[in-house]
Picture (cartoon, rainbow, N blue to C red):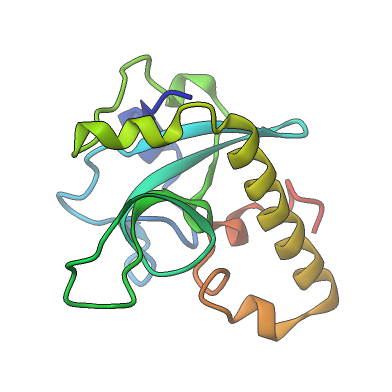
Length: 161
C-alpha cells in the first residue's frame, strides 16, 4: 500500500465542500497556506474511489493509527495515521499524483505494508455505519467523534442518500 499525494487540481475542482481537512467551512475555501498536499491511500468502495488522508492529530477511532502519540500534551490525541473521517471522493484520477508521499518518521510507512484488506474493511464498515445512521437519523452516531465532522456529508448523492 503506497501513500500518494493529491494534486493541486483536486483543491481547485473541489471548492464547494462542506467538510474537509484544511477547509474553512465558514469562509467556504481552503485555508491559506494549508494546501500542502495530503498523503493519501486510494481505496475503492463499489464504483467509488476515495482518498483517505494521513492526519497528524487524530482524536477518534475511525482511523488506522500508524504512530502512537504518547507525549502529546492533549491525551485525546491518539496519534498520526489514516483518518477515515476525512476521506475524499476522487472523481478524476488526475487528482492523485504519481509522486510517493513520504512520512515523518520514515519508518511509519512500514505499518501500512500488507494492510490493504484491513483498511478497505475498516473504511467500508465506517461508510456503511454512516449511511445507516443517515437513513435512520441516528443522532448518537452522527454526533459522535467519528462522524460529527465526517467528509461523507459531501457525498450523499454518490452514497445513495
